[in-house]
Length: 486
Image (cartoon, rainbow, N blue to C red; front, side, top):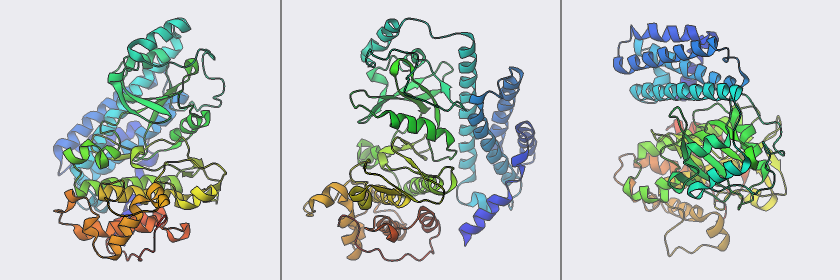
């Protein structure tokens, strides 16, 4: 019941949505004068709001505020300003939006919005520079000169064939809110794609840390030609991500298709991916405490619910896993990698295909066997991710015997279910959590994870159900049956 009340409060405080941003900034600055708590954080918000006001006036004076590429970041900025206004109001009157802010520390929320506003200012400044740059100049140098520059420090380049201004097979790329980077800009930002700048890699791409000319840190995801990444994967990401507006979805800043390259430029996540905190070095050096794991699980659930129910068109991610969950400076999760994601037709909850893609260990059984991908397939992958985060493991310790299928596709399922049935779940939980005072909640969440990895899709909860179960500790949970791949 409390969650429904909270959602109602959010609806009630969304009044200023129609106010233009200049007026909204004025309301923020004026509102800070009468706050009763968090004075320092609110004053910082006021400074960021004033800086935003100056930048917006500059965009208006240069007549680029209506540029098609400005649409998405301007909408994102509007949402951030609205959130700032609501937080300022909650600092003025203890009763105003109390339920909205009850779920987390108000000062922490104010600091988070400060970071969002700082990011918006840097992004819009970079976009302004890119728009101005593209209107007064073109990329200089021959193809061989650019190739030689990119090859410096071990940078990889695409094959010689197709040395055209852009990749001919990429059609209908979105223009709203995306920067079309020159290859030379990204080569310069990443020190020519050097090994020192490499921060991640997969079967289809390598990710580099880059710093743009204005100082904005970015992640540069460059397709690997050895991996023969399908062009459709790149098209999918570049067409889907710009439509998504959610705090738990990664932001795409731009792209590059020059010289047959397929490069995405994304917001930089300093804490990289979640898997490094589960079974990487940081899992032992800096283990996550239970409150932080709770926030991460809830953030992933909220982001996935947004994909399934709230965005248009609705989306099945298709490859939810810790490696595709990025963590920002506050360890807040952001879902990334939409290369194999599927859009749903109105009224549909699944898409059947003969092609099965995804990551072993996270693929739902009905998709593996019949090629039918549904929202419940994402629920399954979410459940596996949740169980891994709670246990801190990819699979059970020896000598537990598993079938070949269970070992390859559901290694945690049998172990978790057997221990749950035997009421010995403390053996499943990450030892670093054994001293946590909220053991009952941890075991309850293992049960939610088991419900998500049930064999049949109809036995799994929807993501809306998952969000409610995670948010309402008094909600009654049904007992899970045998999980998939048992």
